[in-house]
Length: 198
Image (cartoon, rainbow, N blue to C red):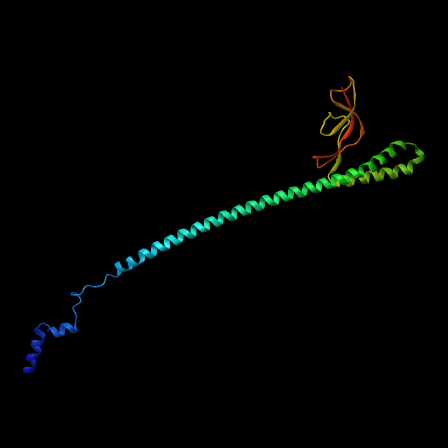
C-alpha cells in the first residue's frame, strides 16, 4: 500500500526542482528567432548580390555597346575598302582600255578606207576583229558614247568644231570625229570628239 501511495503522490505532486532541471519547460526559455536572424544575415547578402548584379549588368551593357561599335566600324571599313577596290579596278581598267583604243580606231579607219570589192576578204577580217574587240569591251562594261544625233553634253563630248545650220537644233551633235568610250556609265575613258551645230 505504501507503494501505491507513493505512486499517487508522484502523480499529484508537481515535479520537483530536480525534475525541472532535467526536463526544461519549453515555454520558460525564449526560442531563437531564426526568421529574424536569417533576414538580418540575408539583408547584407542581398544588397551585395544586388550591387554585384548591377555591376555585371553595367559591364554587359558596356561590352554590348563596344561590340556594336566594333561591328559598325568593321562594316564601314569593309564598305570603304570595297569602294576603294572598285575604284582602283576601274582606274586600272580605264587606263588599259585607253591604250588599246587607238588600235580599234585604226581598225575602223581601215574599214572605212577599204570600201572597194577588191579588199572584200581583208575587210571582212577587219570587221570581225573590230566586232570581237567591241564585245570584249562590252564584257568589261565599256561601251561607246552615243554622239551623232544626241544633244551636246560636255561631260561626254569634246566639241572641236562648231557649225551654224538651221536644219539642226541648238547644241546638236552633227558629226563624230573620234568615238568616245565610257566605263559603267560613270567614268569617261575618252571623250567623243564632235562637231556641234548652232
